[in-house]
Length: 289
Image (cartoon, rainbow, N blue to C red; front, side, top):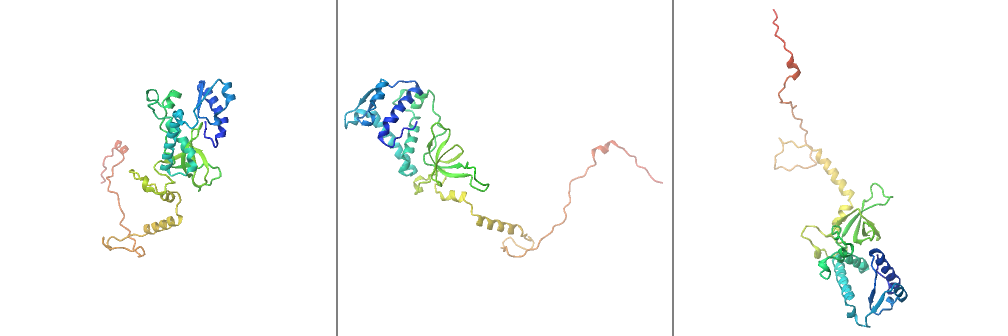
């Protein structure tokens, strides 16, 4: 459930829906709601109809709501780290926060019972870490457009920005069309960040370069250069050198005309045997007078 709000005024609509979502999905009843004294949290009619007691902190006293404030600080600290690492613009801050929440909910916490994760306490099973992907990394997504031709690109260069709730796919941002898409047919390069300008800060010991110019050369083929190399290869194949007239240290020009040597006919040296079926026949020698 997406709870990121563009304005605080939307809290009066989103908060009641979130409470009903929790009660329906996890079979629990909310008894008490604690917030600061912001007017956006005063949904008195809804709280009274569901028997929920509303507590507020004193004005300008955020320490009375310390758990929520510290969690906000935790989310922002990790979210800034993701943006600093990937060098994504600030416009992607909401996707960074969603990814942070996704990670924190699956990490063990000493604050919880037996160092369990929030995901394990809510769903009763351990989370799956096999689908964790580095935020902001390079992704090549399979092109699923029906109008492509046989010679169009079969993959689009994208960046990974999170997961789509309720969908078994990855949320991506297309670097060419500047559009968002969800895809499961992807290939990740988790140590390459397309928005990084100074790649020296993100060098890896695995020998994987973060310079995107290499990827452009792999995807976009220079046809003229490839054609010249192909003709040069053909010309080299058509030339036959005479080993008797050319020494090993002598350099041969590709433009020289060289003779074609035809070697002697080669015969097989394998021993010949009579067919096995002829061994059943015996023929005596007949002498002629």
